Amino acid sequence: MDLSIRRIVTQVDDLYEEGATRVQTPLRKAAVIFIVENPYVGTKGSDLTPLIEVSPELGKRVGEKLLAVMGDHEIQGYGKGGLVGIGGEAEHANALLTTAFANPIRDAIGGADAWISSFQKLACPGDKIDIPMNHKDDVYVRSHYDGMTVSVAGAPQADEIAVIFCASSGKRLNWRVGGLTHEEVVARKASD
Image 1 (tube, rainbow, N blue to C red):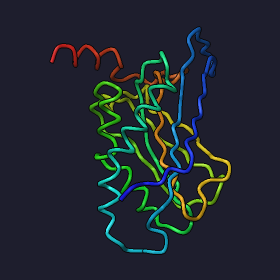
Image 2: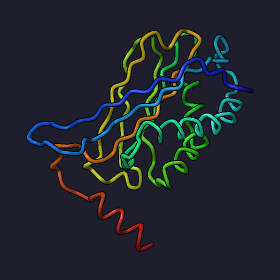
Image 3: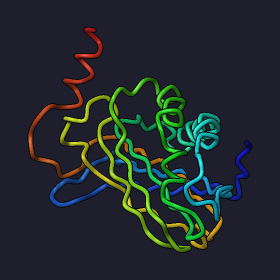
């Protein structure tokens, strides 16, 4: 099976100020969205193994695009999700978002050991989705519990899946809830 890519959309949000915090270097949040034709429209309950099997190539392309969009900003947090047009099932996005899809992205960003938060749903064109994010190496780094709201004008159509991967360059600007820090995780990884 080959996936037919219809559109690639990126969204970038550079935050300089939030709450009582203002920074010189912005917190970058970016979303990379690949809109693909859904080959499973009208086939409820079908075996989705072919989608899982083609997802690593999609993950590789998503990883390349993500690095380009993040530019010089280090990737510290991430999350994934999907919007499935009403002709399909939410499970169609799940099949494209498994570990098989995520591992090439982990490789592209230089590791990333943590589980990747995920959310998917059926949607109409232009619907919003909140993609949850966490630290890329340890889910217990509370400062990186974050998210990004994503919407694509005109997508997903009834026969499309919007595959979404989000990244952030650091902790929430106004975080103050304590816990394990990014710096502690980096030091632990360096000593392993």
